[in-house]
Length: 373
Image (cartoon, rainbow, N blue to C red; front, top):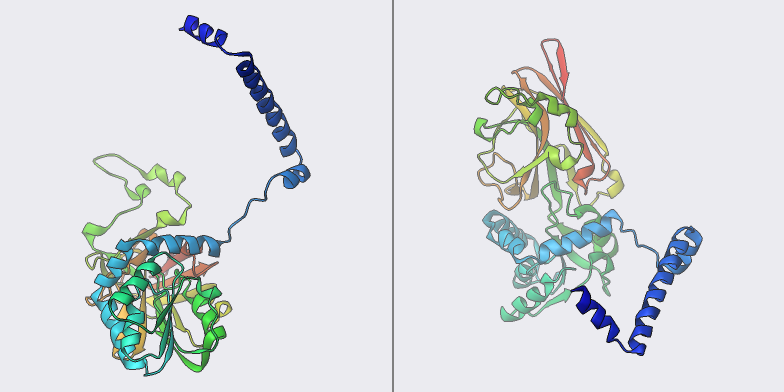
């Protein structure tokens, strides 16, 4: 092999040798130049293009666009019979002939089609993900003619005149984690007529202490003190700090056994009046234990209301829950709560749209003792 390599070099023409030498010289000088530039922030800023730092909102928009472009995400929403029946009936009840309607986050365009067939005069179907191309084709194939498909983020939507209705399904598992409040409020303030309708507009977010079914309980690693004689308790020294480790998600009715107290909304929202700044960043409440059990965590779920008899729920104990929404479990170190105990819960939030910024505690009062998790 060395002899072959030497023969190959010897066979190079003078021009080829010159080209190789020049290339090496240029690479070495570029390396030296790059090192010199990086040593000085001023020189680096002059020579290199600035690195764009994405805001959390911009990162979410990209994640949102990617997620809802996935056809399986659309399949899950369309297969959710409770969701589809809720929106079909809400539109049947509330959309009036001739209404101008914005469908925020149209997806496949099904809600825009419902509004069109209910008699809306004009529908503006807004989505900034690639799914809108399918929505446009589906509308044409199904004879929907009075829907304009707007391939923009809603903050970039501009219309010649305001609309009568903002229709949306910007509801996340944590209620706020699909940017419902900023997106809807922006459209409300810019493009909704005075006295116009937001559909749906009334929401409740719950955060309930609960106990899991025994066969669904997953203790923290450091709570396992006797796994066939093996003790994991020292792992508490390595307790993770990332929020993801301390949260679980499920849509299975067989996970949560019961709430420890009587559920009551943590936050109530009316999108006709709410502003981002009006949401509290700290919420504390007390639950009196009415049913004893292990305090395994706090379960997050939501309800959306159009009328008293038209409510959508993601509660883990509601047999008629809308299954494509998960309920979220905020884990706690395990303790036991007796009937009559008081549970003191505090939730601190930096950004309601970003559950990774949520922090929670739950203290147990009973028999003169207090224990905080």
